[in-house]
Image (tube, rainbow over all chains, first blue to last red; front, side, top):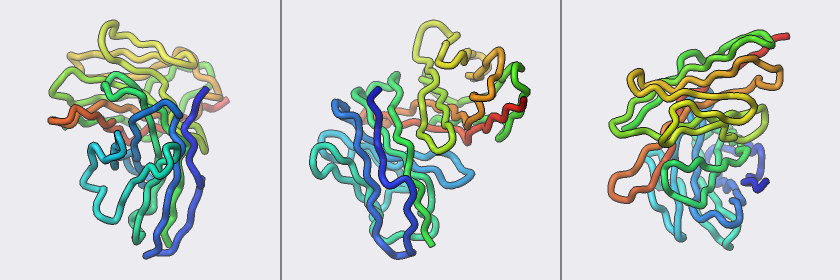
Length: 115
Length: 117
């Protein structure tokens, strides 16, 4: 069964450093998403991406964050200058439809720890 | 905006017992509702979904959920728990962005299901 692949599974970084989280969505999917889950809190929407541009973003997704689909297969989330509060599990997801009755396929997540 | 409430951060059952995980939502429009499961060190896997039609929805691994509009609930059940059901379960509702029609999922805080022998 097709799956969404995320790397690395765990990343530790120092505060102020840049990190790039990588995702390989399912090959025929057109819509891509990032969600995050701070330990003990809800899974929260960050951003959706379609046709090589951001379609929607949450208030969490400030100027520190950016997304890119650099080569037609990878989908990346960059955090320019990490803060302690960026420590969370980050999930990538993709879908081939945008209609709301379709569940996404999620990756297994990247646990980011900022120290 | 939509919201989801999951009662109980932890639910413990014995193997073979009924599993009941509660989910209530608030929605100003007919909702699309989902249950996801997360096994240790794995991603979020779609368990089942309600869109339209039959209010009792069957999913994978013997789970089912019933959409009750009058109670704004979408509780997840399984008649007989198995050790392999131990995982974190998330209820989610689809929320549309006005103007673009793009969707996002709004999740509950999750319920960890513990199954004892």
